[in-house]
Length: 423
Ligand code: GDP
Ligand code: IMO
Ligand code: MG
Image (cartoon, rainbow, N blue to C red; front, top):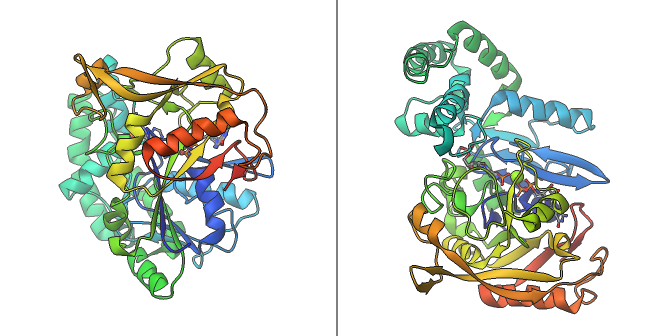
């Protein structure tokens, strides 16, 4: 298997968690390298649903190691809650199999407060963030005023910086955003308690991965969000605050780019998006509702209904080029079962011309009208079917996608559980 990166090719929620869980069987180590608990990765094993926001989706395989890289922003309360849930399910985390980068930044209570108050102030023009403080935390990282995991180990430094930070943040929160301020003592005490619980797990993830590489271990990198939520390459400003593309494993985990063997892109058989922003193939009619209900398209993090639409191959092709994707994992094909007609977008009509890329300005994307190709659907269930046994119309759909994108489909997922997959 060697070293593999798994990346979402749309606007997130493509089913990355499920694909990671399947691939983790062949891996030794699974690593998150960007984003935070804005992510919600769902895995269904033996009928039980697990949702991970920070802990890599390989954790259900008891013998695998999991790491949180320096590029992730960590809300310690959420991480400890995940520890607890795993323990309730009989999975105990030990420092031998779980490592958090000492360089990863901490989400602080004022980050969350700022995220929520800003969105409220924006009203109709809000981004539709998850409200988890992700943007404000990455802002502080770039401004060099953030807290890293390692800072939890130095009480006096932590308190000193916290004092100045709170002075500034409370001014912004109360005077500009008209929201409530936060309390220094309360935060300091809470975070020192977190420090006690987390300190055994904090270490140098990059060094750990270099050693693993030298020992020829198989490392699996788990992307969060999706390519079109990338801060630089996505539908800015309706994006998240990290680089979600595959190359950010270098900055986000300290892993060298030439040690990556395979990049796998995960793509749903249709498209969803949660939060604001342009979405050319969105279906706002009964068909959109049908996909949402049948695909259970409600956010794994916030529970918000996801916007649904046809598969947009312009979006997916652009993501394949940006990431250098070599293989496709196509999920949720079962959700299309029963439809008479299935459409895919193969270009956009934009100002009288057909284009095959996603324009840069979000108002231009909003003007794009999809050019569709139509396929007949299938009625028979896909449950338990091998590639050969798939209905010929489903195969034709998949073959067109693979030809259009110019890469093979190596995994087809036909249901939420581990077993519902064709490899
Ligand atoms: P992620 O953020 O990319 O990991 O995706 P989410 O977990 O947020 O959303 C994907 C949802 O689809 C989850 O509820 C999964 O259990 C579910 N899922 C994954 N693959 C399939 C599939 O092939 N068919 C169906 N019906 N559901 C799937
Ligand atoms: P996974 O890893 C889908 C979206 C939010 C919002 C925008 C910015 O589960 O695929 P943020 O809180 O990051 O500042 O919000 O990004 N978003 C996601 N959408 N899946 C995700 O993660 C997402 N993480 C962030 O809905 O539109
Ligand atoms: Mg998700």
